[in-house]
Image 1 (cartoon, rainbow, N blue to C red):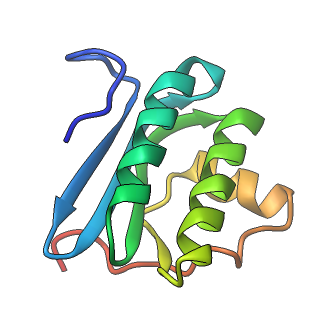
Image 2: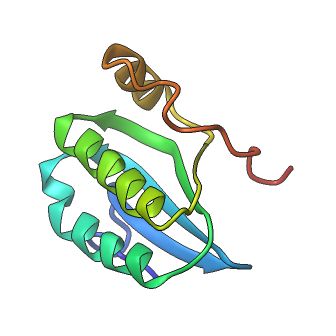
Length: 114
């Protein structure tokens, strides 16, 4: 299921369901411009079961809107007792989470392909 903001766009949010896991792939700039894609992603996560993996390896920029999206995903999944794991975080994501003191909120998932 692709919840991106346009085919071929370097910025977007993609949701994949595989083997009982929901993987949310964020790429490019994650900011207020991704609001519609983030809303569609939230619906897909709410409709699914199992763990949620956030792949932020291709994020080049993330602002407070993007952080709010990550926190909302964490809250929704945690309320349903679903683990939320962070896979391959980009430097931008690592820096922002550390800056706001949330670097321990998201346990790390195994890198893709391992």
